[in-house]
Amino acid sequence: MMLAAIFGLIWLVLMVRASLTEYRYWQVIRHYEPEIWDKLGRPRMYQMPLVFLSAKNAKLLQSSRHEQVQRMSARHRLTGIQFLSYVVLMLVCSISYFKLAV
View (tube, one colour):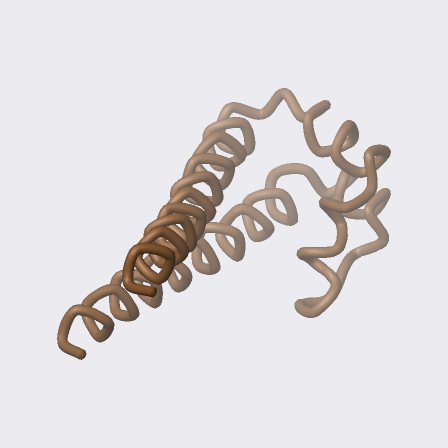
């Protein structure tokens, strides 16, 4: 039970970290690239994650040449990959544990 609590806490920390990084990324875009922000339709808080689903919007976000925006984009991508990697690793470990336990 203690192990599950530790894994859950790690998941929570990674999720909060990824969420805060995404929020900071959007704030940097809004501040340094207002043209791109306007082309994205000035997304509200609940719309922000949905902007990444469109290939057109992803290309628009990658077109920024501002150093701070590029740095935050790389950081956003890295934290997302770390979070998803942890989730996949935990799923694989859980599946293998329950296969062996049965």
